[in-house]
Image (cartoon, rainbow, N blue to C red; front, side, top):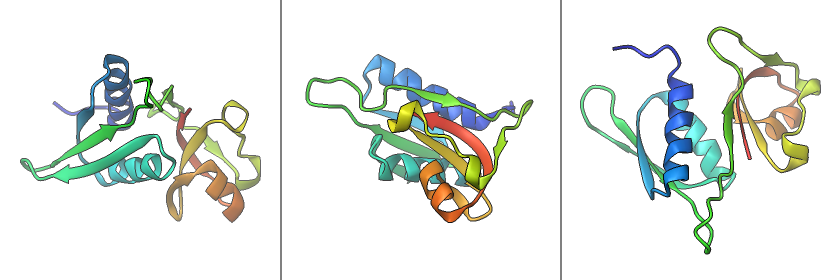
Length: 132
């Protein structure tokens, strides 16, 4: 069965795994999902991710990151742009997430990057999600 919003499915799987206290979560792989995981890793929200070759599509195994008191580093993750309602922003109009404590992830013409990187490069694009 095909999915109407695979990015929302990925974010929901990560959110549910964090709430359950799991060490890792498996997600059906795609190029966009790998790039989102790369941004999450660079920003310190996940420990690591790996592409496992299973079947036609492959699987992304995402290792979640927790603090020493077992509280999750990733407090919240929310889909902004949806298939039914796309949200685009210009390069000069990118707003901070949670007063600068969070990160927005954008799909730009130069690839997937954080809102801060897009603001510095003066690139606009589709706001995929917000993480805090």
